Image (tube, rainbow, N blue to C red; front, side):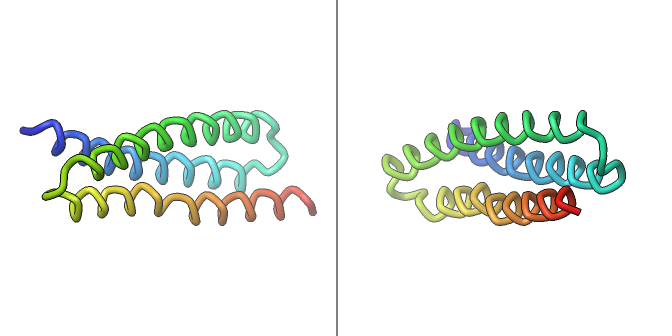
Length: 101
């Protein structure tokens, strides 16, 4: 298996894991809305997720620039990774609106 294929699988697994863990934190927050521990853990998770996803995005962008013949596959991996951004913004909106009332 090539290094490019491993990178593609990792980025997809990272996107799925980020979505799953973020959804779990949202669910926990909705079940226990007054728990400061869940908010703090979720905040720490978001910071780590941003870091890991940003590093992976930079690496995929580098791969996109140097691998001319695999650009379509790499672009799909980038879009899968970026698809978590609107989900994270939606979850943030839910958490902020849930804490205001």
